[in-house]
Image 1 (cartoon, rainbow, N blue to C red):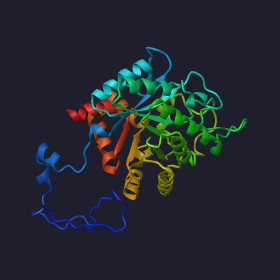
Image 2: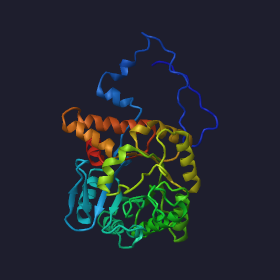
Image 3: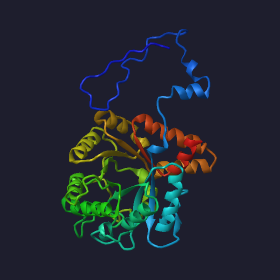
Image 4: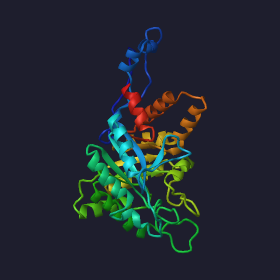
Length: 353
């Protein structure tokens, strides 16, 4: 083996893993890195990063009705599902080893106050109850946002007549807290606010604790960028804004230090897991978040990231399994503990051979 030099940096947070501060001091021919690449068993023995099915979360889109399986044109293999079909897909994924799903709801009626987002009989609340009844060992994570439920498609309340897309932050917090509470009351295991309103983690934590749900974790979309990679999702969730855009509340993709501030604020407010979204364009952010805070860190491989691979594979340009696996491995190598991915069921099968 080639000798290496490393030091443990003082003052690093809990969970920090020391890394080499210099590359190595060996020289050829004594040092031959290829020795450990000679066959699959050796390569696997010294692999620094591993994929596990226990790290996967499958996003699913649920709609009202029965027997509904409405394919999303821009996301091959993904569909809007009625609850009976949702249970089937979640059950198959869970049987393959996927431990968790992330639910997005599409309501019957949208309005100016996102009423179905926090209704006891809302589509997500119904889906949670059914999933926990049919598949009790499945972790059910619920997306907490208002865009799918708002008539205008924005993630919070907008002043009447305002066509700029500027969301009224503080009044929106109450609706988000009510939504998260309704999900917990339905049986959700984790609530995941994705709206990017300032102070929403604190509002949700207080609402949950007040009603006796202090054990429910919050997975915060802490560093969520205003990304062009969300396009296919907005078809799936029927959540495109009708005017303006989301740049006044989602982050500028040019900013990295700001992501650390957002994560720090969410942790201070009570987040138990922090998320970076999108994933591949933000490998540097994932790494910085994990190294800085040592917190459980999720990466969301979003719709366009998934769809680009599927489209290229369908055209015969790439090997789908190889590229999918390498992509997810890169997220793990960057520091992600949890991988939210539309390919979760396939990845689970490939991991297990």
